[in-house]
Amino acid sequence: MSQIDLGIPPHELGDPMDDLFSQLYEVFNADPSLASFDWDAFNSGCCRFFDAHHEIPQHAVLHDNYFHNFSPLWRFHMNPPRYDQAEKIWEHAFRPVWDWENSEASNRIHKGAAYYYWGVTAIFRRDFDRGFMLMHQARKEDIASHRAMNAGPAWAFVTLNDSLDSQVFQPKVQEVCDYLDQLLRTYRAEHNRTLDLNRFRSSFLSRPDLQDAAFLFVYVLFRLHTLLEETPHQIISSLFAGQVSVNLLFDLCLLIENVIKQTREPQIRQRKALRNNNRPITFFDCAEELAFSANLNVDGPGLSHANRDFRADFNGHMTSILNQSGSLEDDLVVAYGFRNHGGHNVHSYQFVYERLPQIFQQIANVLFLSCEEFL
Image (cartoon, rainbow, N blue to C red; front, side, top):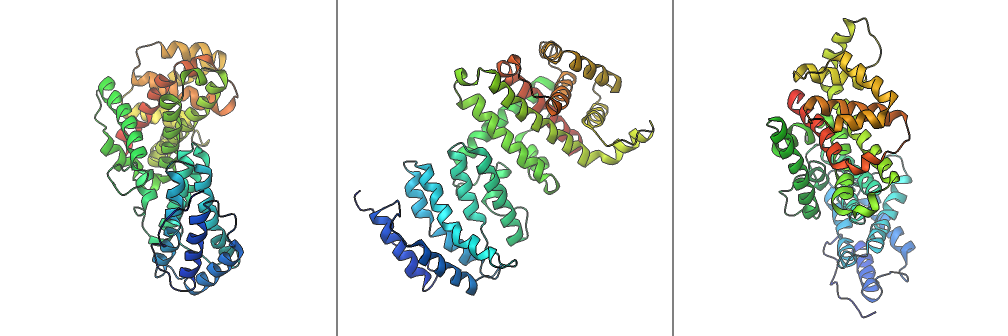
């Protein structure tokens, strides 16, 4: 392989770290696989550096600079994309950090930006589980180091902030934002509602006490966007694809339940107390609360009747509802069916993968309605 010229590490850390990174760049310029690099010596030097510069927040900038010195190597493997090699760069970067942190319970290095870049890499290679776990770690790091919920690139990611030009992942975030915006446009047009992307972002995605639910929503959105917009129809036309879809739809129903429960628990418990019902709050209770608040023409007995029909013939009854007009009442019953059935069964149905865009829209409508009513 011909020699690469990446220049010198862009961020000075002081000796001996500057010398270690210069050696790393020299070896990388000759062999991007870094097979001959002395990682043991590098890692030992890093641990000594962390011993001397471990205070947060005063040394957080140095921690960022340490990781930023790996970014030119990472970018080399990202264009053209060699995602496995790009991820290895971050594995090398984290190895001495994890070794040093594990040596003492109180040791911690700020790692937010590096987890973000690694998460971006995993998501680009469609490893969504790993990518989102890394993004979640990035959020955790940024909150711990900056004592603020709205700091760091991972915050821009989880809130689908497509206005930050400096965000590495901005084009992908823009693509998913456009997809979400279309879901919201359909919701507004078909049901005469007003929720738009800006309000959804501010009332739900950016709300501190709903961050876990927001993170799950973005995960489901990425997964379903990939299934519906980027995967050939011949691949997803299978019963297994239907089961994968059911699992994602169940997650979406679960976060709807979480949003309603977290924002309306006192009202729901009061309603249950009038019936001498002291059992834990369920999706049924949340659906009933939403129907009452939004003046939907579906009550508790109606939901119970639907649940009985789902138990008797989930395929037939769900297909019947999907063939109806598509009112918000229908949307709520669809969500109720997938929440109860998906939580207790491992089945796959042909109608799920055949009508996944419609089902996703209808369940998303219930989340949008919950945000309009309660947030």
